[in-house]
Image (tube, rainbow, N blue to C red; front, side, top):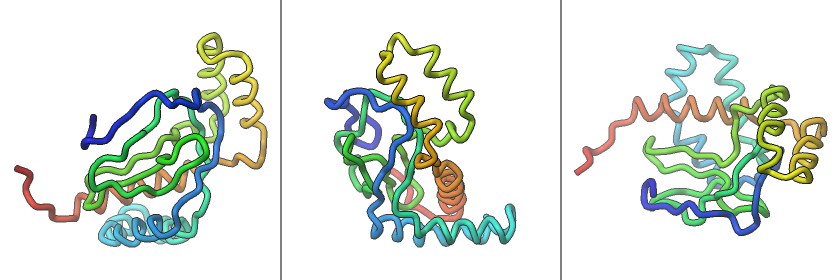
Length: 172
């Protein structure tokens, strides 16, 4: 498995719909502050407002994304730092320092585009089961489940920009 971690079938079953991930504030803070090298590039490319939004993102304590998976990260890769988890799985988000990897279980690409997610549910309804689909559909309309896809997208971008400006020792 990638980076010596382990992905297995989640014994709790299918995770479908919008769900919250409780973030570990210490790890989240460390991650956002470790990416300072990417701020200059982000500011140059995307402007001051983008950087202000990134600064606000460091205060995020709960992250809601849309999910659709049976598997989960049951064992973190070596050197990975867990950013948070949920009742469904303890490793909903993690990163490997020095620009190696940033991972989330949720799907930030399923943003507020309800039609895209609805299509996924309809096309896979028989596989997921009608009860799971009904619960997932309910989260599409529930205001409590406003997703944090933009915050995660900004962080992914900053992670990539920081990785491009960080010198790493050569791999052997």
